[in-house]
Length: 214
Ligand SMILES: Nc1ncnc2c1ncn2[C@@H]1O[C@H](COP(=O)(O)OP(=O)(O)OP(=O)(O)O)[C@@H](O)[C@H]1O
Ligand SMILES: Nc1ccn([C@@H]2O[C@H](COP(=O)(O)O)[C@@H](O)[C@H]2O)c(=O)n1
Ligand SMILES: [Mg+2]
Image (cartoon, rainbow, N blue to C red):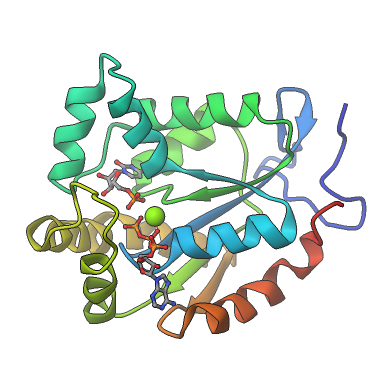
């Protein structure tokens, strides 16, 4: 059984001082937040490659759920097209299953928690506190440019839904960032720079967690 991420890395505890244990192993979780198109997925891929984390994108898990034809698929699809947030019990269950299935003990949870309900549901069900929150800061103007140029066929990459996603980000996701900031857990990155420059800043933050095992 794995007992720790790396003996030299201080692993976060829950607020009551108990360890972050999932499926019998001690785990480290980093929440990755930022506006739509700020570069969360792009930088998570780099972190996986250099520091051996497992990347779990809440949005990707929800899109897979739609594709799988699950009972909730139609409802998730219409919520995503509206740029709104899927009920937490669905997203938290998908994250929990993916974490338990994984053999890794270091997770990047991208695009989550998107609102306070997501945060509380994760705390109550999974009972893990994040090591920190990596927050990508970028202007809306730049994020629109990136999203409209992404070309991945996403149903929500159109200007109407993008505007709605920005409002949801401001109204529901930024309060989560502020909550973690009040606990001293936010590491803010200037995400407006080119991809390699953003990753230089990200690397500095992840140095204690790497490098990826050979
Ligand atoms: N620093 C950057 N400079 C320019 N383009 C970038 C940068 N980072 C990412 N991109 C590009 O912007 C687009 C959006 O990036 P990405 O998918 O990583 O964003 P995201 O934050 O995961 O968005 P979403 O919340 O919509 O999933 C992609 O086409 C990506 O290649
Ligand atoms: N915690 C979450 C994360 C995402 N969603 C929905 O998925 C959409 C796409 O998410 P990305 O992170 O891939 O941009 C997002 O706009 C939400 O509709 C969610 O409900 N809850
Ligand atoms: Mg993404």
